[in-house]
Amino acid sequence: MKVLVTGGAGYIGSHTSLCLLEAGHEVVVIDNLSNSQVKSLERVQQLAGSNIAFRKVDLLDERAVETVIGQSGGDAVIHFAGLKAVGESVEKPLKYYQNNVVGTLNLLHAMDRAGIRTLVFSSSATVYGASEEVPLTEKAPMDATNPYGRTKEQIEDILCDLSSADRRWSIALLRYFNPVGAHESGLIGEDPSGVPNNLLPFVAQVAVGRHERVLVYGNDYPTPDGTGVRDYIHVMDLAAGHLAALDFLKSKVGTFRWNLGTGRGSSVLEVIRAFADAAGRQIPYEFAPRRPGDAAVSYADPSSALADLGWSARRNLAQMCEDQWRWQRDNPLGYGESN
Ligand code: UD1
Image 1 (cartoon, protein in one colour):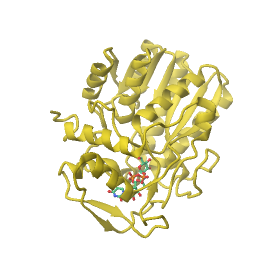
Image 2 (tube, protein in one colour):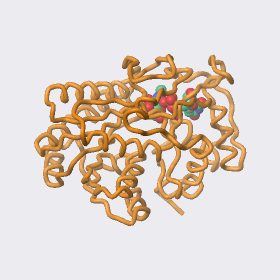
Image 3 (cartoon, protein in one colour):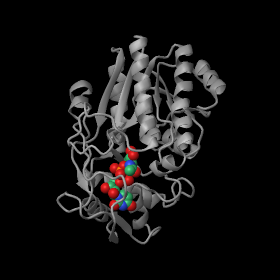
Image 4 (cartoon, protein in one colour):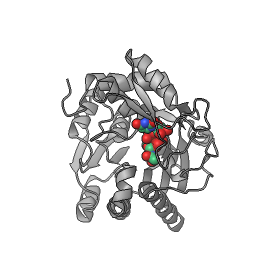
């Protein structure tokens, strides 16, 4: 299959592109490199031993999107491209709605004109908002609590409306829980710009001395050790979920949604301990007040993905930390100044 991957140079996009190449698919990456680097794609090609076609295009450039999709052709699109910083989305909501929602509309118009109507969309468990009715099933209502989350919600709605109106579309909405880890080679991984907001990349940077300690946001939650519980999922398991969804869509029309998580929650302290074990070094931390907007507990019921796609996450927290550590150790400054 020929698969167009928007945002393919980013964290989840690069790992998924690698899995696509390894499964024998042809890959065209469309990325504006606003939060990623082509170096990730060079590494993917090195690992796969095959080539990716790369097109530097911004999804807000409607004509360029139409041209690149029309010229590339292809059988399906996996759409990762989007802005994802929760805090920034609260400060600059218009930027988020413009980039994520309008960018997606441009993509959909171009796909329709090119006759490509199979799409896997990168959604997020963030659409469940502060719901703590765990485990979360796909039936839980969408109730995002910030503009970033609402862009995911709105795009999901747009895609549902589209496939209801035109039965030629086959669409998968993949709701990721907390993606972490890296490819086991340590050659590709997450390269957050600035100080990371998410737990694992921050812990990894503490391990290499880029920060003194982890601030643990809240130790008075109603959880076994008082710290927040999340469903961390290895990025390679997540990538495999995209291939399973693509395969499913070959014989189905309509919109389908699946949680991609492990179904197991880990607390902040468990993560810090697992990372310290993986890295063989201390991870200093101190307790700090709760971070506004954080839920106490969130983890998936991933049984629909197992039933429909035959997919389940295989890697445990120790493997997530080992792989994240290898990437961080070998590339302390990300792709910018790799060893
Ligand atoms: C965050 C986003 C969510 C996004 C997800 C992607 C918010 C409110 N939500 O979710 O929209 O889809 O990332 O992975 O930002 N923690 C600390 N210290 C830190 C960082 C985090 O204690 O320095 C704690 C948090 O309080 C939380 C857990 O670690 O309990 C995980 O945090 P994080 O990695 O930011 O993920 P989420 O909050 O689940």
